[in-house]
Length: 267
Ligand SMILES: NC(=O)c1ccc[n+]([C@@H]2O[C@H](COP(=O)([O-])OP(=O)(O)OC[C@H]3O[C@@H](n4cnc5c(N)ncnc54)[C@H](OP(=O)(O)O)[C@@H]3O)[C@@H](O)[C@H]2O)c1
Image (tube, rainbow, N blue to C red; front, side):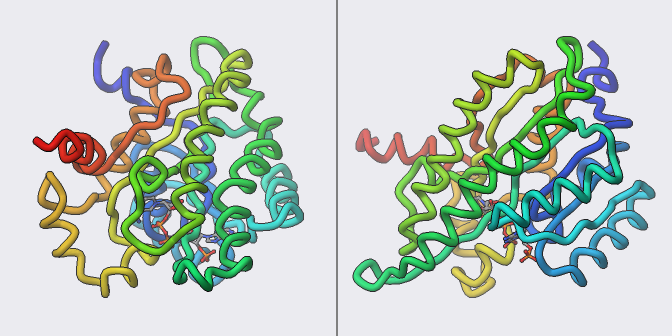
């Protein structure tokens, strides 16, 4: 019952997709700071390799970059093959890489629709499929392997911006989480999703002119999310403490989703 046993993730190996910046970097930092070896992947090799080195130096823990494009099946297979040459097992998979695309409704492009759906939904399924052999190796009833899919509160609430496929893609992530959890719990692999609210990142920044003060003020917690918020929840889900929480989508949003219900009731 001691904290260092309940919440320990020390000595594990993790994969964080989209780990070069934003929420993926925050989760990676939380893992590294607590003794986890982390593989990060993203398309832009230079920034990814630089980030892996920066985080390794900062936390004194191994962070390894494997550049890849997860939006295509071939890119996913190449990534999994490369990972398999380096590791015989993985304990945690964080399916975080995602994209948004905004266009007016009347001219919204097929390209934008496909980009969002391919990366946000299809790649979550196929990255999981390709990494299952590694996730199965250490999975047992006392210490299950973990998969965390990063969804969004836009998959629960109606999004503010004209990002038409984004909300549906994240709702699909939440449901895929439940579907996969029901199947994989029998193999001692636990699947959950986190639905973040606003976190400073390349995805959100341009939409608010890189000024987060307005959305911070509008948030019930009067701020945006921090690395501690997202890393803390991820560590809980990957630790002994999270080992009976299965198939859930847990918001990490300062109370935005809870407040929308309150608003609907007219209160
Ligand atoms: N920030 C928020 O407020 C917020 C809120 C709710 C949910 N989310 C979700 O959180 C996740 C992370 O978003 P973020 O805000 O941190 O975005 P971000 O700053 O844009 O980071 C996205 C990451 O994914 C990588 N990536 C993008 N396309 C890729 C591809 N085809 N293959 C491999 N990697 C790819 C990016 O690197 P490259 O560009 O080099 O590939 C980067 O590392 C996403 O799933 C997003 O939907 C974010």
